[in-house]
Image (cartoon, rainbow over the protein chains, first blue to last red):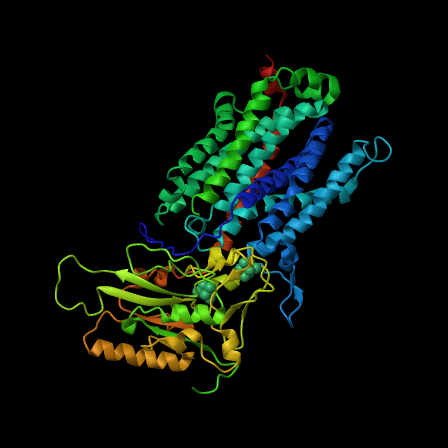
Length: 324
Length: 273
Ligand code: SF4
Ligand code: SF4
């Protein structure tokens, strides 16, 4: 297409605050589930507390999702019409693989099951349910279970962008980058959220270095996708809509949210100050880790994650609100 | 008029070259369908309806091309009037994305939103390229032209077509309307009205519009996307999911790199303050 050739005469769907917050919690929930799963499958013993923290976040963040989606409907009590077709004479399940909203409803339901089971399992492992030191889903089944859950989590964090794109709206339908962009920002937001929350869970502090490192990498991924997003909008001439005033202010917040990660990567690469050496982590759990974590500043573990999370929200807000 | 038979495709041929902008169609539509409408808004044109939405299922567009200096006869060019309506697209964007199955194709081949099935998710509004649908504030559901589904079941033509005094709105079986439209555009061309053209009468626009138009200018002038831009929402599924998949793979890799990094003791020693 040549410059400014895309023609859009559509009306905006008025998807506003409920949808913004749904997109946010979907990103955090799905992203946290993935990070937790990576910790459990590929981390060491000291990463287990952080894995459980991740599963707690995945579940708690997901709780408001169905409420937000239902409240957004013009007929909230008919939310189940998404799943069951009530057309007279044609009862049956609704599933349209070509409509992300339809796919998303089922993915959300399925992911909800995984997030709930992993949440309960983490409670059991933490000894909060039943006898202390309970065992979770171990062995191959457990591994397969959380792997499937993580794939669904990735889907939930990303499909919201595809949902916007599968429309005829300006900006949204002019790019193929939104799904990836929302996923990348959901991942960086999840890493930031876990950095923030592990302050309240001392045992999980052993993994702070890994989380900070992940956040840096995800920030780069997100930046790359923002670049793709911009480049794909140029031919259709819709760049001015999404980056115009006042949305530019939201973009500034979104970019500010990338600063901690990218600056961290530029200044110290993948090394994180105050992180205990591998040998120390392996030998003991609690003590060493806590001592080490105290050395990471409030700056790293509070201010920066909050900034990242605000950026995640601002990015979505800019994309959702600017066209409506 | 001949019997309206289920199983046959019906629609509108809206010939904008004879529209006089009287808005009888808008009134008849609201009257029959009991649409309360909005408070009229008075701007600097003759259009106080605004656009198609849940209350306005017909909307007469007034396109003011009056030049500053007079220059001979306008030949219908200075003022373009067009009674807009849901196009009842053969490949309907709204129907494609609707997650509840509320939007169906009726026995008359029209596109109909079942008010008792729709749950007001508004996905169809984001999809319809013609800005036809909106949400009824009272009822919460999406609403648009039904092609007078109820009247057709009672063997009556839609209210707007019945009311139109100039026959700018013609109702009938789509195949017959297409023939009539072809004839009309040929006649106009022969009379020297070279700007007359049909929009949506063949499959180039959304597989063919059951409610199609004779226009006196480029489609864009009437807020209708041209052929290249008449695209379905589902075109973005593959690209969108692929980008998500690519990001997911990179995201997993990123997580693994972050985990792996600290296992390299040499680098870790350097970290110690
Ligand atoms: S014009 Fe819009 S509302 Fe009407 S059938 Fe086509 S996509 Fe659906
Ligand atoms: S608002 Fe109603 S008709 Fe439109 S997509 Fe949603 S359920 Fe379907």
